[in-house]
Amino acid sequence: MAADASPKFQNSDLIQVPKLPNYHPEIAVISPESDGLQFWQFMISGSIAGMIEHMAMFPVDTIKTHMQAIGSCPIQSVGVRKTLESVLKSEGPKGLYRGIGAMGLGAGPAHAVYFSVYEFCKKNFSGGNLNNSVVHASSGQLVNLKFGLVE
Image (cartoon, rainbow, N blue to C red):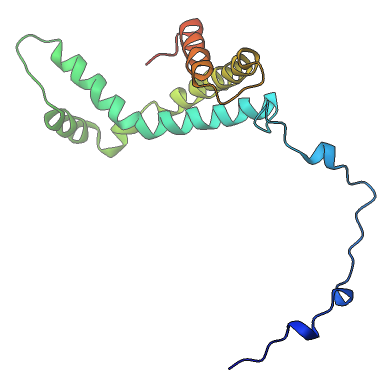
Protein backbone atom coordinates (compact mmCIF):
# COMPACT_ATOMS: atom_id res chain seq x y z
CA MET A 1 0.00 0.00 0.00
CA ALA A 2 1.29 3.46 -0.87
CA ALA A 3 2.20 5.86 1.89
CA ASP A 4 0.26 9.09 2.25
CA ALA A 5 2.40 11.99 0.97
CA SER A 6 0.01 14.80 1.99
CA PRO A 7 1.72 15.66 5.32
CA LYS A 8 4.98 16.28 3.47
CA PHE A 9 3.37 18.69 1.00
CA GLN A 10 3.56 22.34 2.01
CA ASN A 11 2.08 25.33 0.17
CA SER A 12 5.33 27.19 0.67
CA ASP A 13 6.96 24.60 -1.63
CA LEU A 14 5.10 26.12 -4.60
CA ILE A 15 6.90 28.71 -6.65
CA GLN A 16 4.86 31.83 -7.18
CA VAL A 17 4.72 32.83 -10.83
CA PRO A 18 4.50 36.59 -11.24
CA LYS A 19 1.89 37.98 -13.61
CA LEU A 20 3.20 39.59 -16.72
CA PRO A 21 3.20 43.40 -16.53
CA ASN A 22 1.34 43.77 -19.84
CA TYR A 23 -1.43 41.26 -18.97
CA HIS A 24 -4.88 42.83 -19.05
CA PRO A 25 -7.64 40.36 -18.08
CA GLU A 26 -10.40 42.69 -19.30
CA ILE A 27 -8.99 42.44 -22.83
CA ALA A 28 -8.40 38.69 -22.65
CA VAL A 29 -12.07 37.94 -22.01
CA ILE A 30 -13.90 37.02 -25.22
CA SER A 31 -16.94 39.16 -25.77
CA PRO A 32 -20.10 37.03 -25.98
CA GLU A 33 -21.57 39.56 -28.41
CA SER A 34 -19.15 38.80 -31.24
CA ASP A 35 -18.32 35.11 -30.71
CA GLY A 36 -14.73 36.26 -30.23
CA LEU A 37 -14.18 37.02 -33.92
CA GLN A 38 -13.77 40.28 -35.78
CA PHE A 39 -15.42 41.29 -39.07
CA TRP A 40 -12.45 40.31 -41.25
CA GLN A 41 -12.28 36.91 -39.54
CA PHE A 42 -15.92 36.25 -40.44
CA MET A 43 -15.10 37.14 -44.04
CA ILE A 44 -12.10 34.81 -44.22
CA SER A 45 -13.83 31.90 -42.50
CA GLY A 46 -16.93 32.35 -44.67
CA SER A 47 -14.82 32.48 -47.80
CA ILE A 48 -12.91 29.31 -46.92
CA ALA A 49 -16.08 27.47 -45.85
CA GLY A 50 -17.91 28.39 -49.04
CA MET A 51 -15.03 27.41 -51.29
CA ILE A 52 -14.56 24.04 -49.55
CA GLU A 53 -18.28 23.28 -49.66
CA HIS A 54 -18.64 24.15 -53.35
CA MET A 55 -15.47 22.30 -54.34
CA ALA A 56 -16.51 19.19 -52.43
CA MET A 57 -19.92 19.15 -54.13
CA PHE A 58 -18.63 20.12 -57.58
CA PRO A 59 -18.70 16.57 -59.07
CA VAL A 60 -22.32 16.18 -57.93
CA ASP A 61 -23.22 19.52 -59.52
CA THR A 62 -21.44 18.48 -62.72
CA ILE A 63 -23.48 15.28 -62.95
CA LYS A 64 -26.68 17.20 -62.19
CA THR A 65 -25.93 19.72 -64.93
CA HIS A 66 -25.20 16.97 -67.46
CA MET A 67 -28.44 15.23 -66.48
CA GLN A 68 -30.37 18.45 -67.06
CA ALA A 69 -28.73 18.98 -70.44
CA ILE A 70 -29.34 15.40 -71.62
CA GLY A 71 -32.82 15.31 -70.06
CA SER A 72 -33.93 18.35 -72.03
CA CYS A 73 -34.10 16.09 -75.08
CA PRO A 74 -37.62 14.55 -75.07
CA ILE A 75 -36.39 11.31 -76.65
CA GLN A 76 -33.90 10.29 -73.94
CA SER A 77 -34.38 9.62 -70.27
CA VAL A 78 -31.29 9.72 -68.10
CA GLY A 79 -30.24 8.52 -64.70
CA VAL A 80 -27.30 9.26 -62.44
CA ARG A 81 -25.42 6.09 -63.40
CA LYS A 82 -25.86 6.66 -67.14
CA THR A 83 -24.79 10.30 -66.85
CA LEU A 84 -21.73 9.44 -64.76
CA GLU A 85 -20.70 6.75 -67.24
CA SER A 86 -21.15 9.22 -70.09
CA VAL A 87 -18.98 11.88 -68.44
CA LEU A 88 -16.26 9.40 -67.49
CA LYS A 89 -16.28 7.81 -70.95
CA SER A 90 -16.08 11.07 -72.88
CA GLU A 91 -13.89 13.20 -70.58
CA GLY A 92 -12.40 10.89 -67.99
CA PRO A 93 -12.28 11.60 -64.23
CA LYS A 94 -11.03 15.14 -64.93
CA GLY A 95 -14.38 15.84 -66.58
CA LEU A 96 -16.05 15.86 -63.17
CA TYR A 97 -13.81 18.76 -62.11
CA ARG A 98 -13.65 20.84 -65.29
CA GLY A 99 -14.42 24.45 -64.35
CA ILE A 100 -13.79 24.07 -60.61
CA GLY A 101 -11.32 26.97 -60.54
CA ALA A 102 -13.80 29.52 -61.81
CA MET A 103 -16.43 28.28 -59.38
CA GLY A 104 -13.97 28.49 -56.47
CA LEU A 105 -13.01 32.04 -57.36
CA GLY A 106 -16.66 33.07 -57.39
CA ALA A 107 -17.66 31.19 -54.25
CA GLY A 108 -14.95 32.78 -52.09
CA PRO A 109 -16.08 36.42 -52.27
CA ALA A 110 -19.77 35.51 -52.30
CA HIS A 111 -19.54 33.52 -49.07
CA ALA A 112 -17.25 36.09 -47.46
CA VAL A 113 -20.02 38.67 -47.89
CA TYR A 114 -22.69 36.19 -46.87
CA PHE A 115 -21.05 35.17 -43.58
CA SER A 116 -19.98 38.67 -42.55
CA VAL A 117 -23.42 40.18 -43.25
CA TYR A 118 -25.07 37.29 -41.43
CA GLU A 119 -22.92 37.90 -38.34
CA PHE A 120 -23.54 41.64 -38.56
CA CYS A 121 -27.32 41.09 -38.70
CA LYS A 122 -27.18 38.52 -35.91
CA LYS A 123 -25.29 40.93 -33.67
CA ASN A 124 -27.61 43.87 -34.38
CA PHE A 125 -30.86 41.89 -34.07
CA SER A 126 -29.92 39.98 -30.93
CA GLY A 127 -29.90 42.82 -28.42
CA GLY A 128 -27.08 41.07 -26.56
CA ASN A 129 -28.75 37.62 -26.43
CA LEU A 130 -26.93 35.50 -29.03
CA ASN A 131 -28.69 32.31 -27.91
CA ASN A 132 -31.95 33.41 -29.52
CA SER A 133 -32.72 30.98 -32.34
CA VAL A 134 -35.29 33.35 -33.89
CA VAL A 135 -32.50 35.90 -34.36
CA HIS A 136 -30.30 33.28 -36.06
CA ALA A 137 -33.09 32.20 -38.39
CA SER A 138 -34.22 35.71 -39.28
CA SER A 139 -30.64 36.88 -39.90
CA GLY A 140 -29.96 33.95 -42.18
CA GLN A 141 -33.22 34.38 -44.06
CA LEU A 142 -32.65 38.12 -44.50
CA VAL A 143 -29.21 37.49 -45.97
CA ASN A 144 -30.61 34.77 -48.25
CA LEU A 145 -33.34 37.07 -49.53
CA LYS A 146 -31.06 40.08 -49.92
CA PHE A 147 -28.16 38.37 -51.67
CA GLY A 148 -30.06 35.60 -53.44
CA LEU A 149 -27.72 32.88 -52.19
CA VAL A 150 -30.47 30.32 -51.72
CA GLU A 151 -29.38 27.23 -53.63
